Image (cartoon, rainbow, N blue to C red):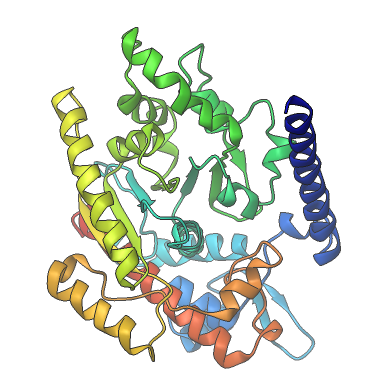
Length: 392
């Protein structure tokens, strides 16, 4: 029996090593090693949308020499880098009648907005939703910190890191919230290839927080688990307009720590009855646990809570019935925009990219445009919630 156990362990370990090697080879063959380090250029139409102006006005600004020159093709087509957008946005705001017209981030007196994307059930689109929200808002001028607290580290992987190689011993969120000699949060933050986004990465070590917390509760280690994330973030929050948590698919100590640090919650839900039943259990458990930590001194004041319909197929009758059921049940707490199920999103994921990173020419244009329009509607609605929380 012992011999059989050893063989199984060896086989599992070998499988893990083979998968890691295959994924590394896939990354190397799918695109050049440096491709993750530089964001693509954007067309004039995309740039105008992100700047909040018309394409014709953008052309006039160039004609009048009121904004900086950008890369122009032999045919006269302009292409904009993320850095170009940052500079142009500042130039526009400097010439605006009202300061802040084009710079929509935090102002004096505004608190940092901390959003948690969560659900008890795996496969509900938390990571897809959180990274697209982060990227859209960064491209619109917000300073964003992505905090990956899922030990599976899918968000970290999408930013080009290999947790099983790069972060096997240190450098994750765990190091900033652990009970034994934690690091400053700034020490674990990584710059990303995506302008405007920093990353606090995850890795398997995060699971240690779940294992260590029961003992820490017995020993009354301070601050307690539910306050450690908020306390750690205080060191860096002044550097960001928005902090986004990608939570694990479980209601453990990590998720509770994120909930207690958040100002807004986005609960992703796939519109079928099995997922709705799972979400009902998640909400009940969340309420019970939040009661416990609230009685223990946790401060939880949310500016908003919204349900995001994810992986929606508009022509699926049963799904539409579930959506109607949710809207009737929760009213305005269900976001008006929904994230459509799209082959463009899944195909982009094959090379660890998002819709905002890939070129339109790589896809069927109608499929790509439909996915982009869906994502933009969702993320612009999230932006409006943030602006409203700031009193605008």
